[in-house]
Amino acid sequence: MNKFDERKKSFEKKFAKDEELQFKISAKRNKYLGQWVAEKLGYNPEQEKEYILSVIKADFEEAGDEDVFRKIKADLQDKNISDEDIRKKMDELNEKAKSDFI
Image (cartoon, rainbow, N blue to C red; front, side, top):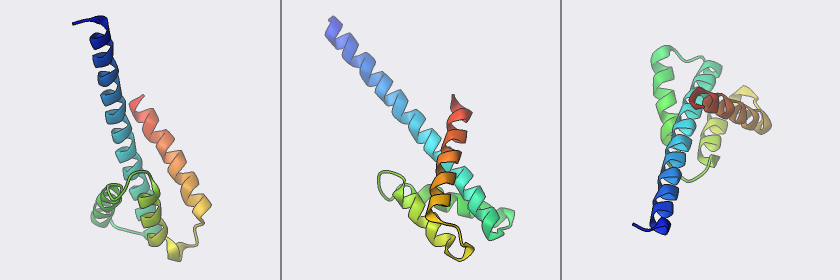
């Protein structure tokens, strides 16, 4: 194997590892978001578990965070929480999720 092939494989491994880490961070953030929203909605522990799973599943609808944002916004529409507050909480919980892995 020449140096180019070794370097290529190294970059591929790093990319795969970075993507896996980002997936784990997103899933953890979505769990935290689900807990936050469930608390706002006054859900019991069983409802909270189901809600967390629904937030995690919502993230698979499209690339990026807009699918999760739309779900949370719709679910909190009666709670008078602004888009800015939701996005701020998403950022805050993303940082918390990162710190769990790094």
